[in-house]
Image 1 (tube, rainbow, N blue to C red):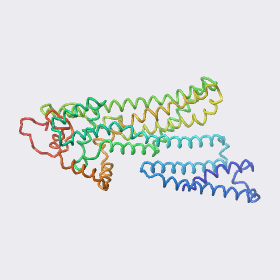
Image 2 (image 1 turned 90 degrees about the horizontal axis):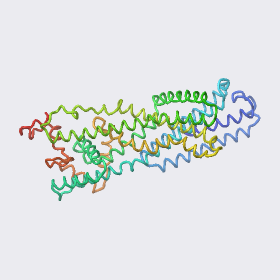
Image 3 (image 1 turned 60 degrees about the vertical axis):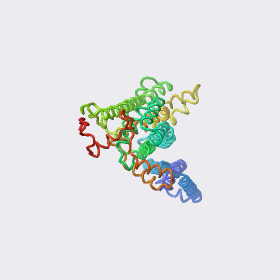
Image 4 (image 1 turned 135 degrees about the horizontal axis):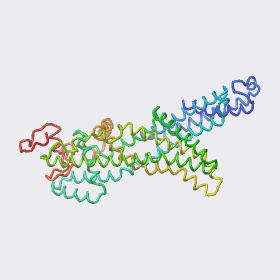
Length: 451
C-alpha cells in the first residue's frame, strides 16, 4: 500500500511533465508514448527506484521504533502518505479529464500541497507532545513516591506518618490538590490494583489521548470545513478593507490566527476551573468522611462528574482535536503562502515568527499545561480506564523484577490506607472500604455514617 502511494505521488509529477511536453491530457497522448520508449522506461525505473528506497526507509523505521506510542505515530504517518497518494491520483485524473475548465490547475496543487504540509506539521507537533509527558508528570511522580514511602515505612507510627506527610504537604506547591487526586484514584481501585502508580496510569492515559488526536474522523473534518469557510469569509472581508499586501496578511493573521486562539484559551481556563472544583469536592468528601455526623445533603454528595465538561469528555476531546487541526491548517497556510512573501521585506523574519506565534503558543505552552488536568478529569471515577489498569497489571505480573514483586505483595497484604485523617487513619480508606463492602463495623457508635 505504501509503495503504491509513493507511486501515485510520483505519477502526479510525471503527468504534469508529460502534459507540459505534449500539451495535452495523459489520456490523449496517442502514439506520443510509443515514440519515446526509452524516456517512458526511464520514468518507470525512476518510480521503481523511489519505491525501493522508500521501502528500505520504512523497514528501517519499523525496526528502529520499538515503543507502542512510536509505532502508532509511524502507523499514522504511513496512513497519511497513503491517503495523500490517493488524493494525488484523483487530482491528476480530474485535471486531465477537464477539471481545469472549472478551476485553475495551480489552485489544485496549492491546496493539495497545503494539506500535505498540514499533515506533516500535525503529526510532527502531536508527536513532539509525547516528549512533554514525562516532564508534565515529574512533580506528580516525585510527590506520589514520597507519600508512598511515608505510608509504607514500617518504623514510623501513625502519628509520625501523619506529621511527616503534613510537613511534606507544606513543602510541595498544590500538594492538597495532588493529594486529592491520589485519594480519589486509590478509592476507586479494587484491592488487587492499588499497587498501580497514579502517575504511571496517567502517563498511559495521556499517551492514549494524544494518539486519539491523530485519528481524524468525519466530525473533525466537518468542523474543520466550517472553520475554513469562516476563514474564507474573513479573507474576503480583509480584501475589501484594504488591498495592501501587508495589511491583508496582518488582518488575516489577526482574525484567522489569533481569533480561534481565544477559544482554546477559554477551554484552558474552563478545564482549570473544573479541575479545582473536582479537587475541592474530594477534599469536602474527605471532611464528611471524617465527620459522619454531617448530613448527606452537602454539595459534594450531589456532585456529578459529567458536570465537569460542557458536554461529555468525548465532545471536549473532539473540540480540542478540531482546534489543534485548525491551528495546523493555519500554520501550513502561513508557511506555504506567506513565508516567501514576507521574507523579501525588511523585518521579514520577525513578521514570519509573529504569524507562526498562535500555533507555536498552542503546541508548546498551552497544550502541555492543559493535557494533565484534562487527563485527570477524564480518567478518574466513572471514566476510570479499566482496560489500561488491566494492561498495567498484566505487565507487572509478567515482570520478573524481585523488588517490584515484593512491593506488590507487601502492599496487597497491608491495609490500603491513603488519606491523613484526624483519627490517625492515614489516607482514610477504612471508611471507604466499610461503605463499599457493606461491613457494619462501627455503625452502633451513634453515628449514622451517612447511610
